[in-house]
Structures are given as structure tokens and as C-alpha cells.
Image 1: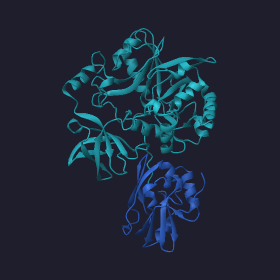
Image 2: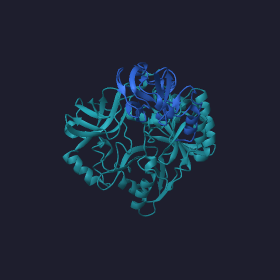
Image 3: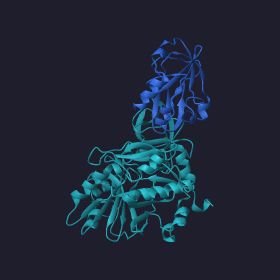
Image 4: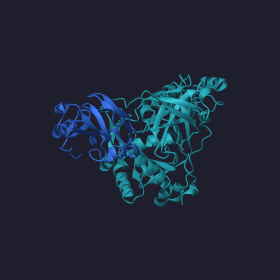
Length: 129
Length: 384
């Protein structure tokens, strides 16, 4: 398995977060996408809604299972990847790129400091969580 | 996103008699093709190779190879073995001729389904093919009802079993074998020897497509692996995993043990009265006759569900605020491009066209009962 991109941080629950000014782009990792198997639907909150750190704010439906989407940070959803409505498989094919999920205007970026860098995350999934 | 370690196809009972996970004789083939392996019924099995939906669609349009070596294979021979099968099976065994296979249920005294099996009659024995997770249960059930000199031999681990399924399967079989194999009738089989190796080719199936199942000695695994790899290279078929096998059988409305079938449900409620011969004597017949007489309380139905949310097993089915049933299997149908599910619902809510709702992730989602199967393959001549 190719390693995870170094330009972002990772949660233990397999989401990635990439900061650009105060906007945080979020998605799930390739490892998570592979574990879920074929993703058939992604349920995301509308633009303008507020999400809270550590709380489930969306759901991913795959052939195998239904999983909650968690955010490490709180804030306002400023953009949702609408391409996933018709092509949820983008998450399987390119989870770090076109398969991103939401952009969040973060109220406080500090929770991201507690997340894993790519090496720590590589190690974690290498240990077969 | 906490990742569930549960798999799509939880084995109802995992049992080989020990805790060891078994590998099929085609294990190396699966690894070679990058399969994601999972523990299923105590066997390390391929869940998928490239993707469940791709493998599903390829089976519908061309042909796929499935390793089904985990399924139980139990041989019955000796005086009394026919009588024993007649006592435990829901359909007649005595009138089966050599070369014939028959699907039926094995029930307990209450009419609860212990397993669904396929019986095949060879000239000197009968073969029982059962679910992988039920192998020990079925063996014990057969042994405990055996009298006289019935000999029960479990050949699951000394043989392997594959399935080739899809519209291109039979032309491929005709190309590589003699005509006899290409012309096997549905629910029949042909067996023989090839270079001293016994083989059996069945024409049954669990995908809704035409195709064959093949049993070979386990030691043929490596040789077969090479042959299959050549088939993949030549574009004759692609490997498909248990994930696609599950979505394919669900579109074809074929029941899965542990979901639609279990010991708390009977063949009539499961909508499978056709596989129960109430004229004959077998274990559970009294209970099933009683259910047939007064009509079942619940029935297995097919639901078309609005939206893209998948109704998972045990999701509750409602009419208004009244709970009227429960989902047994659900998926987003790759062929039909909408959500489908099988459910047991109260009989008075079980007619086609009935509007109901399913609770998915705390939300009521509209559903309607549709005719089963969800998918039926086009007539043979539809494909050139």
C-alpha cells in the first residue's frame, strides 16, 4: 500500500484534514475506503451548517457497512463535494484528491495539533488497527 | 470514522471444530490477484479483488470465477443412506436419478431450517453440499439420525470447489471440454476423470446467471490456479469475491442462511413452499403442514427502497407507527441502480404494491413491496 500524503494530518478514526488559511478540507483515507469496500452513498450536511468536534456529522454507506463520519474540529461547513452525490465511487478511487468531502471554516484549529502526522498514521494502520 | 470489523456476510456460526482459519487450495491464486481476504465461516476467503460493484456487473455481462471451497461437501453411502436423506430432506430423494441435483431444506422437529442444501445422486453415493458455516451442524444432524451402516464422509478439506457464473460461461465450457459438459441440464451434473483426477461439474448457481460449479481434488489446486490465471489473461472471466456473490444472489432473491433462513423460520414463511414436499414424511413435516394449513404469520418479501441508504439486517419495517416486519438483507443494487432489500413482514402487509417504511439510521424511508426476484436474467437468445 502506498503511504499517506505528508501534507495533511490524520485522525485515529481514519479521516484526513488539510489546512489552508482557516479553511480545513476533510476526507477519509485510502485505508478507510478500502476497508469499507465500494462506497454507494455519502450523506453530508448542507453548506452553512455547524459541526462540533468529535461529533458525527455525516454517514458513509458502503456495500459492507454504514459508517459515521467524525470531525476532529468544529466550525461551519463552507463547501460540500457535490460530485459525490452522483459519483460516490470517487471516494474509493481518489480519497485524498477528488474524493474529498467537506470544507470547514474552523472556529479553532488547535484540535488538529493532537492528530497524527502521515508517518504516525502509516505506522498505525501498518499495525492493523 | 470508526471502522466496523463486521463483514457483509457474518457467518452465522463459525466452525471447523477448532479455531484455526482454513485456507482453500486456491489461496495463492487469490493473493496473486490482490484479493482482500476475510474470515468467513472459518475460512480465509476473498471478499473482493478490484471492487464489489465491478465484479458484480462483470458477472452479469460476461463471466466470473468464484472460489466456493468453503462450502461443506459431505458424502453419504452405504445401506440406509437413502432412507436417512429421505428423513432429513424436505423434498423427495428416492426418485432422483444418477446425475441429478436437488435443492432442499433440512429442518428440525419444529420446522425451523437447519440448513439449505443441494443433494446430488452419484452411482454409489449421494453428495450433500451445505453452507460452510453449517458444516459441523449438518454432519452432526446426519450422524445423529443415521441408522444401520450409513457412512458419512466429509470431503470438504480434501476437495476444492469453484463456480463460473455469467452469460459467457457455457460457451467457454464448450470450448474447453467435450459437448457433454456444455450440455448439462440445470440442476444436473456430470462427473468423470481427467488425467486420473476425478472431477464433477454441476449446473446450479447462486448469482441469477447461468453457469457451472466444479469439484476437484484439493491437490489439483496449484494446477487449477495456473489454468484459471490463463483464463483471466485470455479474458475468459475475472475473479469475483464473496462481496459480489452476496449482492448478486440478493438481486436474484436467493436466500442466504443466517439472514433469510435460520432455525426460527420455516420454509413456507420463507416463500419456498416449492421446496417442501408435504406428501412425504420427514423431520419437521408435521409442524410445516400445520403452518401450511393455517397460513404463515410472516412472509419473505422484496422491497424497493427510496433513496440511497441501505437497509441493513434487523432494520425495522413500519406501516405508519406499527412495526410490521424486519429486514434480512439489503443493498444498493448495482444492476437496477436503486436500493433493494428482503424482509419478513406480517402476512396482512405482504402483497406486491404495499407501501411501507423502513427505519434507516433513525429516519423513516419509503419502501414498496415488489415482485421477486429483483433481477431475472434475459433469455439465452438475447445475447448473441
